[in-house]
Structures are given as C-alpha cells and as structure tokens.
Length: 185
Image (spheres, rainbow, N blue to C red):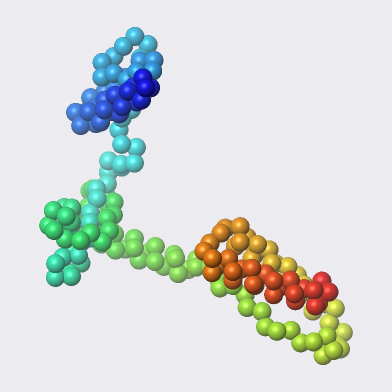
C-alpha cells in the first residue's frame, strides 16, 4: 500500500514539475520538489519532444475540405486526419510543403520497397513427359524451389494470423509437400 502511495505521489510531483518547470529530486525511494541529502536530480523533460519542431494538423472541415493548420482541429470543430512534426524555423507555407514532400517521399519508398508477390507454381508435367537429359536437374531445382516455399509458408504460419490465413497457409503447405513427394525429393 505504501509503494502505491509513493508511486502516486511521485507521478503527481512529476506532473506538477512539468507544469511549473520545477525540478524533481529522488531521495531514496521518495520523490520531492526540494533537494535532500544524497538526493538525485531527475530529468522530467519530455523525451519524445524535439524543441526544434512543432506540430501541424491536417483537418477536414465541415465542407469536406482538407486544411493544414497549426491549431488543433477540435478547436475549429473539424475532424483530424493526421498530425505531423515540422521544423519550427520554417514559415507555415514551407512547413506544409515540407510535410507534403515528406509524404511523397514516404509513398515512393513504400512503392519502391514493396514486398514481391509470392511465387505461383504451375502444375508440373508428368515424369513420363520428361525424357530429356535435364530432367534430374529440373527435379532438383523444383525440389529446392518447393523446399523454399515450404520454409516461407512455415515462417508465415509462425507469424500467425486469422483463421482464413492460417487455413490458406496450411493448404498451400500441404500442396507443396504433396508435390515434393510426387517428385521424390
């Protein structure tokens, strides 16, 4: 019970110090706004906030227009679409250009580095049709390809997912293993 009370008082002191700009000290297991013997000064600054950046908001007005603004969307009774941190030293128009350019760069990066679609395997001709000299090599390549597919499906299965996804993974893995068996891999 004492630990809970101590934790609550520490949280209250930190919140008060954030509002008033005061310093917080840790004295043993207690927190205090006044220095104490052997006490340690605690940094209460916001670790996630960059002092050189400010937040601007993209809002949807009542007329469905998208508007960038430095005030909060709810203050104008608009719906907030998103918020972005921008350099403080830029003019507002330049801040908007910065955000839109950053969004375009991010979109291009997503398109550039999009994962490839999974490989599709076509039905293999029967062994009787493979009378050429490369059939052993082809079987080896098919076996290797099927083994890679099974490993990929296993990794998808370990990642988890919904029921339909897991059923699809299970079925694809079964089909790949069946092909491996038919090819005598």
